[in-house]
Length: 607
Ligand code: ATP
Ligand code: MG
Image (cartoon, rainbow, N blue to C red; front, side, top):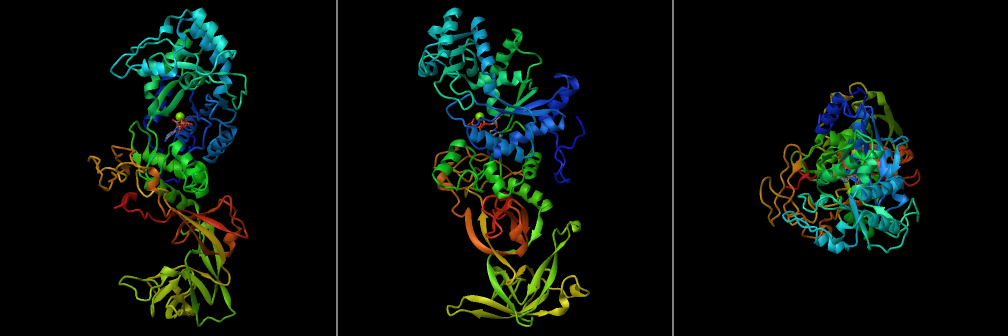
């Protein structure tokens, strides 16, 4: 291990926790298995936008490489010409860079290896380890067998190598239509591992590929292309999610054979699996994300409510927040669900460190200070960060008419309400103590303005100002100086932890799934038991109807000048970000990233 700092801007209170991948890499370095090298890769298919789950994979792969002085390759797994596009490649590159990582010159494509992959396939045929099968996909499925029953060998399994080779070359030459033949490895139709039952490794696809154009009409399948790509790139640790565990024997079979044949160099890469990120209150399946966008349930892929990384960015989430989440929740082989509050809390903790404080009034009510001269105004000074005096102070204009939050006033307050009410005193944060003297109402009885008087001897920061104690402390903006801004108040996209599940609220810990909406209990780590029956209802029925609310509020004048994507804490309200796409000086737009406190109940779960 080097002592290189891994996450330079990670809040210092966090430590880098040990986990099994760190341990096994440390062990490999100790034993010299890969000659002291650590080379990982992140292998997305360029067929969609990356989501929160991919962030985990990126952070693990790039993070482990950086920690160990190695590097991580960005490899586009572009073996399916029908679904892939350059538009997706660009967005994936942007997302990886946004998360803070760089692949340097190591940007590759599985399609870079088409020649090698083809040549190796011919070699397998020549060795009697692969054959051309004329069975249909259906027939192959039907003869594959089950977990308890061996598969049946194809009548083509004994086809002589010369004949398979000739057919394979004719496939490549474009002589056959899609589906007429496939190339299969000859492994073991009785293997208890279904992946080893003569897997198909090449198929005919008369389709134009976004990089290789019409050069090919036979394309390799994932299990064959992936392990060879890893080996050609001299990857040391091929880290993937648990669903690939049963593919590992095939991964090893293919590259071991090629290495035995002198076609690949040893030491070979080794595959290691970890548990994917599962999060409550969202869906991460590509099919569902596409449906949310195409049917207009959200405003596009970068809608701040979407669990995509483009959405996260527009929401105001931070790369360090994602790292913090992964560090806190660890990397393991246990497939668990994390509660959304863990992600939100990680974002809060990072944003608390890095954002400057500002004032915004979201639901304005006029406060008139009757004893303050009409034409007068003055400066008050507010710290940019309460724990970081080095970030300085800024000036807030104060004048006779102010905006305060509507819910900071109550005409008939209950016991324990310390904000403004008739006759009561409150401190205007960074300003004066005021006393409420009256209320203006319209004909319908709605409150339209509050009257107060201020005490000139109580200005914050002046001698003796703090000797008078009042319990309430509210924020405000000078009406003459404040600017209006569009505020997009985002909340969770789904109203329940497990959208679409028969029991969308999840199971009680250790309990049995039932139709009644039981409360999920998260354990101390925020891990939640997944409901037994994951999908029976339509997940769209579980959308949160209040996930987006647009209002007009008031902001400090200088906030209009903020660059898009600048993040702030609006005091007492939450973390906000100047919208990446729509915020301008003339029409400021702020997105609420997350409220200051979890409003979804203990552990973020509905009670
Ligand atoms: P597809 O259904 O198209 O295969 P995918 O989500 O697996 O979708 P890939 O582009 O194949 O997308 O994923 C790239 C990498 O990200 C893979 O190594 C995959 O294991 C990893 N990954 C995908 N989803 C998650 C997740 N929820 N948590 C952690 N890693 C993930
Ligand atoms: Mg995949």
